Length: 293
Image 1 (spheres, rainbow, N blue to C red):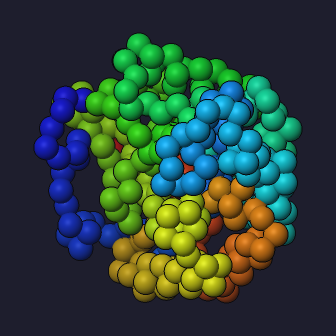
Image 2 (cartoon, rainbow, N blue to C red):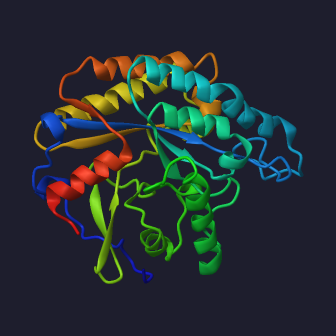
C-alpha cells in the first residue's frame, strides 16, 4: 500500500456499524494466542527490557526464553487441553527446524498455527521488499509442513508499507498486527481491489508488556483480564466483540504464573454466550457476515 496519514480502512466508530453476530449469538469471541518463538543463541539479546542488546551469547536472557519452549509451552498446552480450548499459536518458522516436537503436539491438539516471522530477533521493519517476500515465503514453506498458515502476526507487530500486499500474495486471510479495535474489520489493499481481515490482538491482555514493562503482579494480570472480559461481555449484548489473550510461554508458563491462566479461563467459561474460537474462525465468520470479498 502507499504511505498515508491513516490506515487502509475507513474510520467507522464502533457504535455506528451493523450489528455483528457470532455463532450461537455469543457476545464475545475469545481467542487464546501463545507466541511460540525462537531466539538464536548467536544473536545478542537485551538482558532487561530497557537495556540494549549484549554481545552473543547472552546466556541468561536467552535461557529464560528457551525455558518457554522446553517447559512453559507444555504447561500452557495442559491448561488449554484440560479446558477444551484450542489455541491460535503464532510461530517463528525456525521453530520448525529446531523444535518440531512443539508443532507436532500443537497440531495434535487441533491448534491453529499463524506465521510470526522466521525468528523473533529479526523483524519486517527495515527489510527491502524482496527480503520481506523471502521472509514471509520461508514462513509459509516451513509451517506448511505442519499446517498451512492463513493468519499472520509480525514479530513485535512490525510491518512495512508492503506487508499487507505480500501477505495477500501468499494467500493469507487475516492479520493481527493492528491493535486498534474490538471487532474485526476489512483492510483495503491495492486501492481497494483486495482486502485482508484485521482480527483484534491485544497489547493490554498480554503477559509480555504487562510483566516486563509495567512490572505487574500475577494478581493484577488476573484482575485485568477479567475486567477486560466483563466490559466486552456487557457491550457484546449489542454487537459482538473479540477478546484476545496473548501469551508467551517463557512468561506465563513459569510455575508461579501458570495457574492464573487457568483461573482466567475458568472465569470466562463460567459465562454463557462465549465463543472460544481460532483466529481463522473469527476472520472467516466476520467475512461471511459482512460479505467482504
